[in-house]
Image (cartoon, rainbow, N blue to C red):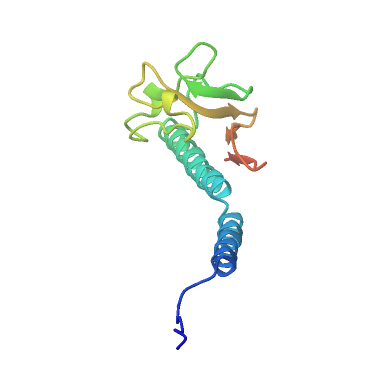
Length: 149
């Protein structure tokens, strides 16, 4: 009598086919999600919020001082910070109009700790009519983040 073997399982081809399908699906999901783009969009959202916060603080300062802007603000767009060649408006706006000056999300080294050493990474300027512009020059994904009031 012949013994009939009844083996159950998957063949090598079937297993390889499932692995290939899973790899293709994983690649499609990664392309659809695009984590690098998501992070860049989140950074730009933070930059937009920071630019508005700085502009709001300067505007409130101006309102309380009868339209006079902080003296350090010039017509040339310059980085807000405490370093050489930067515009230091910290003493004018912190803590009365803003709790702490925000900084660019990709520059943790420039984080605000106090008014003596900080670098926001954001530019500020004022035109001849007293309109203030705050911009984020490090914006990602070719976005322009700038607010004028």
